[in-house]
Image (cartoon, rainbow, N blue to C red; front, side, top):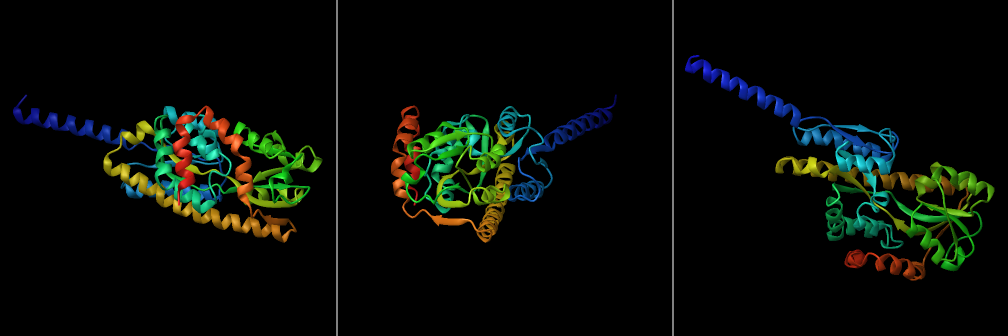
Length: 328
C-alpha cells in the first residue's frame, strides 16, 4: 500500500469514527412530565426542548413525553437517576425521600409567600438544595412553580389554628403533612388525590388543601365551599437532568442547557400565575366563600413541634432551614 493510500485510509477511518462518536453524542434525550397538554408545565417543557436544540445548535435534542406516560413520578425520578431517561420535571415533594435537602421545602410555612420562595430558590438556599440533589444523581437546572397550597373545607372559614380543631383533613402521604394537621388539632387523612372529591362529598373528610388550579379543575370547590388563603405549603418543582449526562457535556453545552431551562422557567412562572388567577376568578364567581389568613404567625408558631421532630433526625439541615427563613 502506498503512503498516499495509507494516509487516505487512516483519514477515512478517523472520519468514520468521529461521525459515529458525533452521532452517539447527539442522541435524542427523553423527557418526563406528569402534566397534560396545555398545562403551564407542559407548555414550558416543550419550550425547553425547543431551546435545547436551538442553543446547542442541534448537538442535543429532547423529546418530551407528557401525561406521565413513562411511569409515575417516583418511578420516573429513579429512571432519571440511573439514566433510563435524561430529563424530568419533578415536584420536590417526592424528591425529598431521595435527597434530604429537598425535603426542607415540604416544611409547613418555611416560605412566607410565592415571592419569598422565588428569592430563596433562585439564591443560595436553592443552590444548597441543588447540591444535595446532585449527590443523588439529579442536577437541578431551574425551578418551576406549583403554586401555594391553602386550606379548603365544607364547614367554616379558617382564620386561626383553632379553626382546624377536630376537622378531618385530607393530606398527601407524607409525615410532615400529617404532623402539620395534627399540630393544628385536626385529624390528618392521607389518601390518593383521585379519592378526594367523593370523600369531601360524602363527609369522609371535612376538607383538604391545595392550590387554586387544583381546587378548581377537580371540582372540589363544589363540595368544599370555604377557601382560606393560608399558603402553608409552597413546594417548587425542578427541571432536572441526569448527573452523568450533564457532567459529560462540554462547558458550552452545560451553559446552553441551563440557560434553556431557566428561560423555560420564566415562561412557566408567568403561565402558572395566569392559570392560578383564572382558577381563582372562576371559583369566586361560583360563590366560594374566600378569606385571607391575616395572621400566619399563629400557624407558624403551631408548627414548632413539626420542625423539632424533623430537625431532631436531620440536624445537618438546620442551617438550610434558617437560610430559607432569613432570605429577604
